[in-house]
Length: 275
Image 1: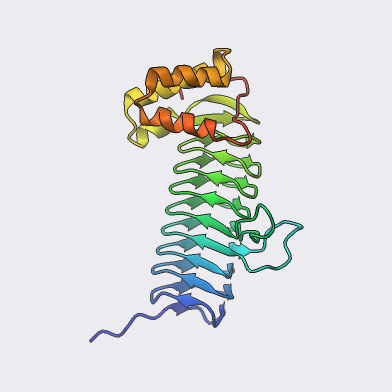
Image 2 (image 1 turned 60 degrees about the vertical axis):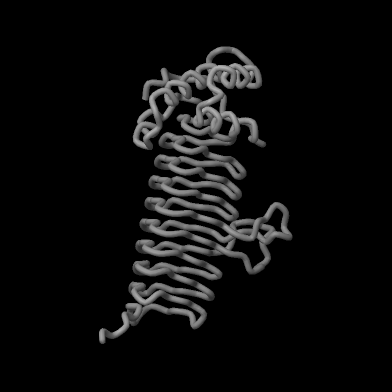
């Protein structure tokens, strides 16, 4: 009978008695697991990382050197309340990524939990603030940061040194260009440059995601109507729905815009949408 696999914990690591580790977890040199930290199967924690509970990481996560996951919110209203960080499966956190736990529910609009989904890539020095929601298959390039309560939808790409203001949303397969910033919502499939300047449609990303040609063409037409036609947004949406009511990508785009609380980016388009 084979012997059960045990977690491999470097002798210099400090692991809380409250921690719950799957059998094949690896903890690197000088890592610190503080409080109720739960690590799923196949998760590897690199050297000099600090994980603070309540914190859950699912299966197959890779946490590289110097990351801090689950630390307290950078918010003057936080007073040490027990809040959470929940992370799914297959994520990669490169060097010095920081993820902060939620604000308490009693501190409106605190949600109590910061949530990250599955298979996301967080490159060096990227940051996820308190109460954020990051979905699946997103990429945060080096230095990309999101403020509290931001929501990042599936497959979104935040390029290097980009920034998302608190409470903003970045739609599915949207792209925020390098050194750019958002102070309003970025609809699905769109590209933004500089600050809130709409640039075009992420055609490459849509193709890679398997979205049909007719839907891509419809999204490009919708982009032009909203950003270049001179129509008001409500008028543009009515026309878009009249022409493309059966297309899922258009329904997703229209629903996202109509549910926006901060308004959507509508800065002057700087280039054709042929990217």
